[in-house]
Image 1 (spheres, rainbow, N blue to C red):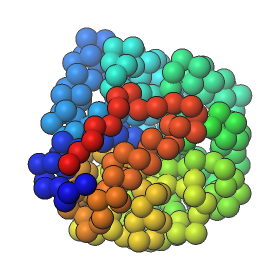
Image 2: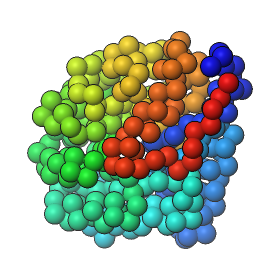
Image 3: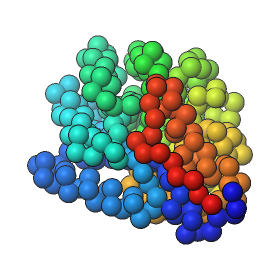
Image 4: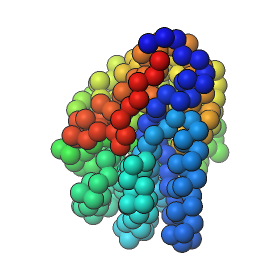
Length: 280
């Protein structure tokens, strides 16, 4: 494949494995929001979005509230089966109810699990969720970042970072664990480096509104291109741009934009919603 220019890389097909469709006031607003997401993605070559609707702020919400968020995603999948896939949000402390909700969502077509900051990834309360994910061969995407500022830590005291992921990866090497948004704020060098010796099933994603130069190269150098996933978490142009701009080989960029996510889907017998075009 010949060297690609920026325009060609923008057209190169991409899987956004970290995105959201939110529970809005009514289904019409949800429909408009998801349609806008897809239209924006078309301008950037994003062919599918792995979406969740988490309850943020560390809130230990009711099982009914959690189910309502996941129903939002199931509606989006039904409206846009060629573009939107689901990541089931749960709060691990609900234990059996969380496991039941995961099975409900996976049986309804979702392809992974989303955790926020109600529990750290290395909390024993999360272990049954991890064990079910291994059994169902699906990934877990957890909100993460190595925070320093006191106000950030006060607002997210149970946020996970790379050291927690490395610990769990050693305990559960078969678990497909994804450290969310290395560009989400905090010390991205430290949190990524802590995962350098993780299992081949430990990943990070490039999303986040922090667009510091060198993030993607650092992640590839520390973890290997096979362990870096493309996601946006809503920062669509910035996340696409920092992969295109990264000093990496074409094969590395292809792994990040598509092939690594394709491999995660293959583990559960799934394929991308649309075939990857041949570029070049």
